[in-house]
Amino acid sequence: MPTRYDKDRKLTNNSEYYAPLRKSRGKKAITHYGTKQIRNPTVADRASVKRTKHIWKYGDRLYTLSHKFYGDSRYWWVIAWWNGYGVEAEIKNGSVLAIPLNLEKALKILGV
Image (cartoon, rainbow, N blue to C red; front, side, top):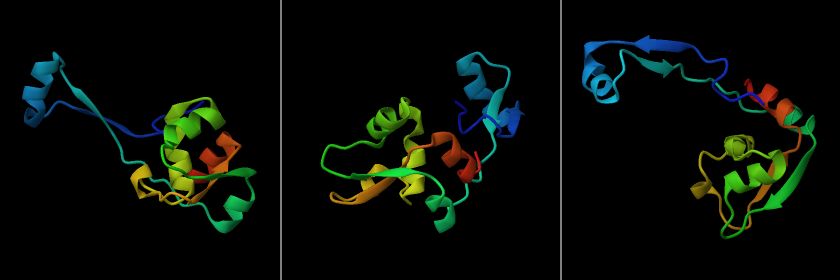
């Protein structure tokens, strides 16, 4: 499965500003990743992907839903982004989440 960083631009930084950090880590340079531009899925995009519903309740975690539906907890952000949430603290009890079942198609729609 791809990760959200696979296609990102990488920058090797050996500037003096990061010298103390490099020294503490025993590194000659630090790798920075470009900011990923993820697009918001349109109504048509959402309709094109089979999904299931989940009613958010006390104790729920996005990473556990990701593990349950995708077999990998690292894709928690797909469920959050698909539903317009930045973090799970924004999700109120009783909120209905749409969970895209085809992860690869959802990632493609998001631009990853």
